[in-house]
Amino acid sequence: MTLATRVIPCLDVAGGRVVKGVNFQNLRDQGDPVELAANYAAQGADEITFLDVTATVDGRATTYDVVTRTAEQVFVPLTVGGGVRSAEDVARLLGCGADKIGVNSAAIARPELIGEIADRFGAQVVVLSLDITRDAAAPSGFVVTTHGGRTKTELDALAWATDAINRGAGELLVNSIDADGTRDGFDLELIRAIRAISHVPVIASGGAGALEHFAPAVHAGADAVLAASVFHTGAFTIDQVKLALADEGIEVRR
Image (cartoon, rainbow, N blue to C red; front, side, top):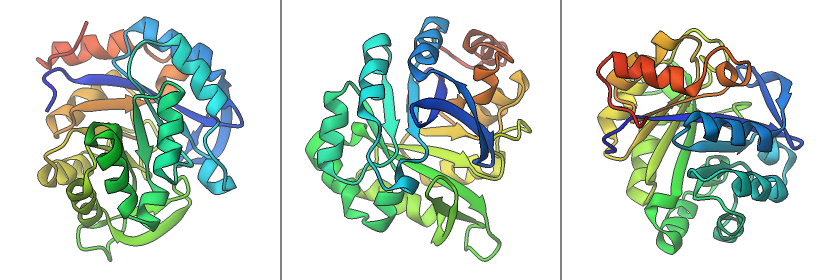
């Protein structure tokens, strides 16, 4: 596990623009991804996550030119996801400047993809992106979704995360679809559940709306905290989040 808690802004990109909605619906334009990424890097972001949220739905690859331009402007680790279906897709994105690759729908459809990427590029490159929603019928009470949260599967979230780690996933990006965009706080129960089964780093995503929301996510087991709309709208800065974490005795990179 990393010693310092990472603060990660997320750029949800559609049509070459950063967008944000509530529960992945009613997406609104939030600006240019390259400009926002450069701004967040200057604010002290530990990493930046770039998710093409409509690539899988549209059946196309991630927008490579936007990834390239973003990577040219920032000098912190860049995770890219959306529309990744093969190790060749990963090779191309790494060539564009990405450091880590997020996989979700394609890995659920063909779990062998995780091992293929890990074997070729290393487990540190593979970020399993988990869009999770509550479902009382699931053994753990949580199931994974695909296609940007639009399609619910019958796959138990904890069972799938465990399988993916065993196949070579080096990190888990845990996004609560129920909390996404609500600004009501992270799903702490979900974070604790994932932490209990994971020996790889866990990134908490979905629901950040106030500075006091971040520390509880770390105490619940997150190694990193990710947010989008609160940064895009200027509700607070990355440095303010780090100050709030430090005030709670949590180590951050300043």
